[in-house]
Length: 333
Ligand code: 5GP
Ligand code: MN
Image (cartoon, rainbow, N blue to C red; front, side, top):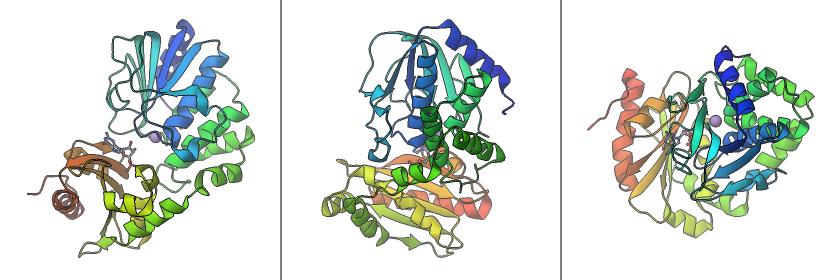
């Protein structure tokens, strides 16, 4: 169990006290944001609360099999007011897409496991040691002494398995494994979830992967691998930005690579590049992403850089080289 019993108690009291709830995670929703939101929504409904779940951006295809996925409303803006807003793994309301502003709920609860978290809520349950926000919601169930149903366990497991990269990343802690064991006892079938989430590639996404892999490159020292996805590749393959999810992981499949970088042209804009980072061990790509106004975790982070892919590479790669040489994240001109 986590040390932060105080935040969990404050959240449990706020839940008991309030009747209407807003729940949302971050933009570009992933398995953790969606799985955590669904499990939390279910917890609130079971307690007789009126809880509404939202996402600004569409649910990725690989999560649409979830039985309760339709309970999440996709909308650019939410009107009305709530007693309480629970925001999952977002460093600020902007990361959630500003679906509501600070006047639309009496109490804001901020639940985040990212190192870039801030204290924007009235109640802040911040735990960079948690593998996932699903792990934090799991502790909320435990704290409130609520037995976890099979469907809730499945949603929490999806958050856990996706954020730990199938139990591969450094955040695969003993607590994460204990949680997995508990969820399997609650009825999760890991092989079913694996097939539903990972054996789901479309032909167009694999065609996009082949185009992206043809740009794979390694820096002189052989420690940084990078590749790119362009609008031309989307056109040639028939794929879209949603199909880029796993591409960066190929960078990390070569021995000796410490940092992997994906440069992705944003659809409909030739002048903005989404940059994703992955790293091994102590190499802190969160610091690197923060140099460019982004963030994330030590070993997985991202940012958006203005300009073309060529200019983004010129700005970002020297900073990554410098980080490996000195341990310092600084802008290199
Ligand atoms: P991905 O590369 O999979 O898009 O993101 C990796 C990690 O970095 C995720 O935890 C994600 O939340 C975070 N991240 C990606 N892009 C941004 C960004 O522009 N700003 C912030 N603050 N975090 C980001
Ligand atoms: Mn997460």
